Length: 201
Image 1 (tube, rainbow, N blue to C red):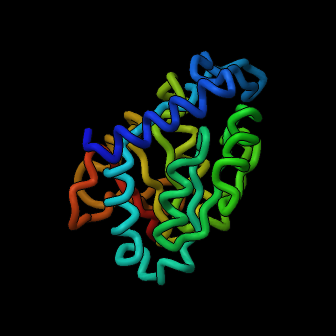
Image 2 (image 1 turned 60 degrees about the vertical axis):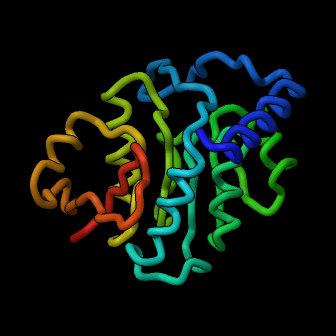
């Protein structure tokens, strides 16, 4: 972990501790009539995401200032702010209203909403990012399918974890899934453990 990453994490720790949000447990939510568990805000590498964001103008073939970015499970909003600082229009959603309210105060130039990822509308976004939202592989697969089915053609899903079904589908060339194909986008920079999935015809 580099020095700037350490500094950001210490600042986040301070902010979360001030709001008694540092030790939030797993977050229950309702899905298909069941109570499921989502992870609380888990920090991932800022450097990897910055590198991935730097690839999007080329991958999406769109000016950076026109890219609509959404983070699912945004916590206090740091990743959204990174996207905004690159020039994107950045939004975030989270299950925990306390995170959302804090994110609105810390990063007022981004848009944050209290929402369940399984109910969210993803049609207006060019890039959706999340970092390990659920314990359950089946839920990860359902979220992938929801996001990718709604994204416009050419849009991307940036993740650190994919479902077993997606792993199988990505072996080889782009595979047809539910009327669309998905391929792992080629990148020119080191994006760490991140995977960029692009929706195709």
